[in-house]
Image (cartoon, rainbow, N blue to C red; front, side, top):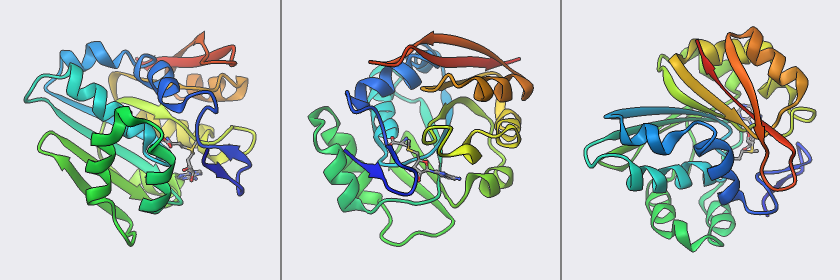
Length: 216
Ligand SMILES: C[S@@+](CC[C@H](N)C(=O)[O-])C[C@H]1O[C@@H](n2cnc3c(N)ncnc32)[C@H](O)[C@@H]1O
C-alpha cells in the first residue's frame, strides 16, 4: 500500500484502489457513456501518484470508446515515483497487467518538466511535473472531465484551494465535469465559488459522501 510520509496519507483506498477509481472518478464523471459518444476525450488529473487511475481509465476506455477514439490524459505530479515503485504497487491487480506494461515501457527514468508519452496510437499521457499551482496555468488544454485526487484536504491544502479550483474551471470545457473522493465542506465551497455545480454522491467503501459536478 503506497503511503506518503510527507503528507501522512495513502495514495488510494486501503479497501481497493481500483474499485475506488471506478466508483469515484469513472462513474462520478459518467465516463463509460461519455467515452462511447466521443471521438476525442480529454481528462485532467490532480496527482498522478502510482498511475492507478490512469491505467484503470485506459482499461475502461479500450472497452467503451470507439475504435478510432482518442484519449488525452493530462496529469499533474510534484513527486513522480520511479518505475519499480509503480510496478510494485500496481502488480496486485492482474486486470491491469497489459496497461501497466504499456506504461512502464514509456515511463521516464529522469524527469523533465513536461513529458508527452504515447501509450498507443489512441492514448496520450501528458505528464506535467512540478507543483500544480505553478504548472496548470501554463497549459492550454480544456478537459472534458477532471479527477481531483490530491491527498486528504487537511494535509494537502494547496491541492484544493480556491485559486486552484478557479484554474481548473478555466481548463474545463463548458459542461465539463469533475469528481472527487472527498466531500469536505470548504472544498465544495471552493468548487462552487469557481463556477461548478456541486453534488454529493455516495462515497466509496467506508466513506459516507463523495462529490461530483459540472461546469455551467
Ligand atoms: C492521493 S495521491 C494520487 C493518487 C493517484 N491518482 C494514483 O492513481 O495513484 C496524491 C498525489 O498528489 C501529488 N501532489 C501533492 N501535492 C501536489 C502539488 N502541489 N502539485 C502536484 N502534485 C501534488 C502527490 O505527490 C501524490 O502523488
